[in-house]
Length: 186
Image 1 (cartoon, rainbow, N blue to C red):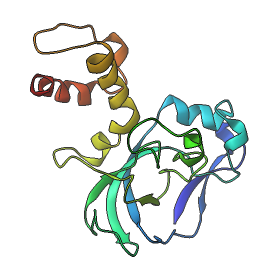
Image 2 (image 1 turned 120 degrees about the vertical axis):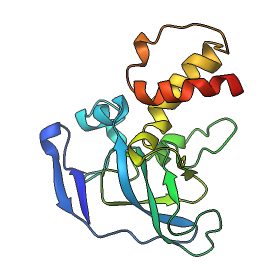
Image 3 (image 1 turned 90 degrees about the vertical axis):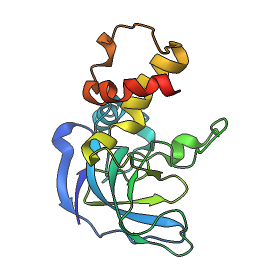
């Protein structure tokens, strides 16, 4: 499969290459990547300023991806071939407080990310992509949109009838404008 490989730090060292298509193991999904979204963390990894000691050579970067399940490993029950899914940064943090080793299990470093034709996602960490969103829109959900949601709703205590300024939310304005009417249903 084609994949972007980080040979060393720096954008000039991000090179398109050929690698073996991964095969799903027990509990895993093979996802054909439809779209990715780039975040500050992704750029910082490429630049070598985000946990450089954890970045393996020939890393496939980028944590946030959306795509279609094309194969499943044994014992997969939550998804089937043809389902659309999202990755999310922390591949093992599903609820509660994150474990101290959670950074060791992040897509896009040190685990292979979505900047490839295919990626492996464990069924427990995959999230169903919203049916009313394209892969391009859904790929923005894991970091960019959830950061904005947290800022508005959890931290900012936004609710129906409140006004707020969206200057800092330019990362994904289309998606946010589409999602804000649903605040009233929260």
